[in-house]
Image (cartoon, rainbow, N blue to C red):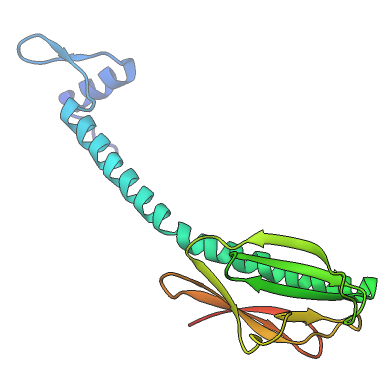
Length: 181
């Protein structure tokens, strides 16, 4: 059984369907919407949220530079391994901390004095790159024509102490990246 709507409710639904503005007791018409204060309040909240997002995005740029450097170095090391095996040359990865660069050179044999620079890239300011236990050699990591390497661990760090280990397997020459915890 349907109950009839009261007259006021029926009149309101009819006015809404017809999209007619209702008048208040003073005779002025009004329409539902947002007040100026509500709009200003929403804009202030959006402005604060946008400012906070900018701060959080800006703080991650240092970590991004560290990740990028680590990926670039690991790519150079993989390049050296692959090309040493395919071209039957020795590839030597060298870190020059004084000049803030790392480079990859190639030579036909270990006795060959003429080394050709294949890659040379700068180390960004605020980041450091070191190789463990290879300070007394002229080559930090060397890749041989059989696909193996001298092995080692390349460490990349930022000013806050965050960093990565790039582990080079001595037997297979495989390069793996691990986060420092």
